[in-house]
Image (cartoon, rainbow, N blue to C red):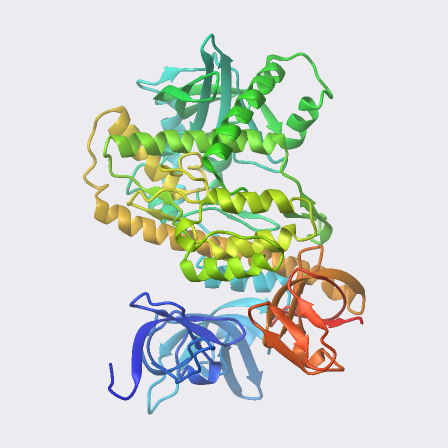
Amino acid sequence: MNSKRKIVEGKLDKNRAGFGFLIRDDGVKPDIYIKNQNQKSAMDNDLVRVEILSRKKSTKPEGRVVKVLKHSSKEFAGTLEKKKKKLRFIPLGSSEKIKLKSNKLVSEASHGDRVIVRIERMPSRNKKALGSVIKTLGPAGKYETEIEVTLFHSGVRREFDGAVFEQLKEADKRMKNRDNREDLTHLNCFTIDPEEAKDFDDAVSIEKTKKGYSLGVHIADVSHFVPEGTAIDREALKRGTSVYLVDNVIPMLPEKLSNDLCSLKPEEERLSLSVMVQLDNSGSVRDYRFVKSVIRSRRRFSYDEVDSLLEGKNKSGAKSEKDLEEMVQLAKLLRKKREKRGIIDFDFPELKIELNEDGSVKEVKREERTMSHRLIEEFMILANEVVASHLDKNKIPALYRIHEKPDAEKMDAFRNFVQMFGFTIPGDSKVTPGHLQKILKRIRESKEEVIISTMMLRSLQQAVYSQKNKGHFALASKNYTHFTSPIRRYPDLIIHRIISSVAYSGEKLKKYSKKNLKKWGEKLSEKERAAEDAERESKELKLMDHMKGRIGEVFTGIISGVTSFGVFVELPVGLEGLIHIKKLRGDYYIYMENEMALRGKNTGRKFKIGEEIEVKLVKVDMKKREVDFLPVK
């Protein structure tokens, strides 16, 4: 700390538009805003020293980089500038031009192409940076190019290395090894998944008993096929999760495992780690056991098929249809119990983009959550809670899925926001999931539902993985983990190994120390966020590609955000864009932060979050990730 200047250190998180935020090492909030011109030679994720600039009490902190302490990487994505004999590289989110060495990749690329560059000489006081192109991605502004840029920034890898495929040769042998497994092939198991799913990692079975229900949640035993420390395991840990883009999936595991040997395919024997739960007629858990099993899924249901059967359509009298009715009754009991303890259930429809064979957008629709979705959701939550409770009760080191109480400042902002719609919630220390769920129930199917739900979601903490069991706020659960999706999530694979090796066989694993679990929890939480960013950008890019041919058309949208520089509007198809404040003609507009609105000084006209507005689409720039609107009236 300097006596005249306030100096702090942390990581620079840069936006594609060029500005960035300092995420402070000391954890103090809010993050510090840093303009592009105040970033010195800092790159995204660099460790930097920042001077906090003087500010008024009403504004958020702003700073400037005074020193780059450590560069996070030597490889960057950006744009190739190829003019005459000069070769330059401009990293995304930066205006700095880096000199390039000439090589074969450069000669094959064109001016304006997206490329990956390795910096061989970092910038210093006396010398400018120097780099070499190591990969060309294609013309800027094309979906195929821009999604590769997104994947690079998110650290998502498409290809598996050779060692992984070499090890896969042993996978078939592992399928034949069924020592000490319980044969559960007599159970009427089946899977329920989206129509387009190819990896089936969970199956369910049910039997009505005199005292209630015997529910089986059968999860693919991925740990049997992926031993710790092997090439496949190391690669899975690096990936952390599967990534679901609009047009394809980048799996955590090779397809031979994810879509074949581990997948609970219909009418094929598969290895499973099953949780057999005994429940009474009120839906309360009375007993449970973990079983390393062999199962046979009798049928592969899609969500639509289940909903159709539950509506009485296309019935054949099969046992699975009767079992589905029993499952619905149990799922309703479980749901009722969870609602009683207080939960937050974001039930607004999910955006789904359907594509034509050529990759173009066929249809964009909001997909409702139906009984088939809720049925599976209830059983998976139950299994996750049973596993977490067992680990916690027996003091077994584990990786929990935690969701901490809301940040006080964010909850204050949300409280002020919902007051504009006539809702009140208690002070931050007394806020419960139940208080928030009451609001969600009251706004269901109203025009304010999406915007209030979205603002509520933004006011909550992010769920993360942790070795400390701090409970799950949104689920109002004291014990929660991720156990049910080991094909696509590495944390679930960790829990499977712990259950199999400690809870099931009594073996102690030294590797699962709290120190290692803490390290894995932090790393896998980061990987999850990176995957979510890539998935979100994939949707945004595909929508932008779809809408760039509709420049000049008029749409009715919802004001999704208001800032001092303009109004953000979201169209029904899910595309969000900006009406810049300079484009609001006929008045001088003032930003009303407390009301989340822009108000005309002379006319009093307001642009307020949550309101409908007619806009004309005037710009779609995939290179800059920018969409611009003009108000129609």
